[in-house]
Length: 283
Image (cartoon, rainbow, N blue to C red):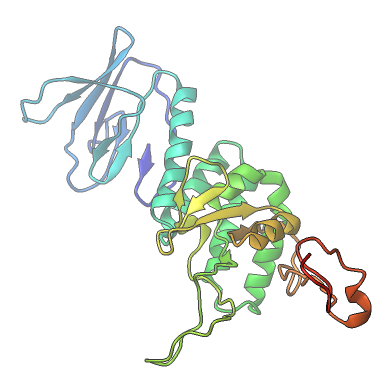
């Protein structure tokens, strides 16, 4: 069972019929406005879960699958004969809720509670520390510093692939982000990079793990777990999001310029493929 703003809970019933309603003697009590005393009956018929509406609606009973979601007064119910099967369904759905509502802390909070109940306390704490980082006003905020340090410490325990799915990293090295210019003034030929306002969790997934698409500039963004990988992508003009566990330093993504000697003494030592030395001919 998943409530809109409550922790996800898993309930097991040993008998083949469950009454859901607001009455105190219901098997599953939902004390909310809009819930009838006897709202629905959940029964098992020949290994098939069937729901019967107990209100005077004349709706016929219907079979449900583990992927179906039954909503009653803002509460989502999912049912399965095998609790393990239901658990496999809920996790991905909660992850998808985070992707669809990146600015809403509720899906991240609900998923954290669900993870803790299902034996993943380190991932639950990771999500809660992300929320703490998001609430900080400045990078010098002591709460931000503590939460960021804890995220870096937890990162190796939660796995790279999962971390990429819930990451809130900002996008770096976006060539489409250019500084503003006065009205009527053409942009400079050689610009400088500004921080992209987009975040990894706001990008659209692609069919490749670790690569997402930005709807703002229609470019692909790669999730990088090392600075070497980030530099390689940036050198090719790609946008990147750097993992929280990656050690950072000022200007760590700057690409060192190539040294091209064009003084008279060094010219003779340069390769001569495709050009000639000063004073020479093209023959």
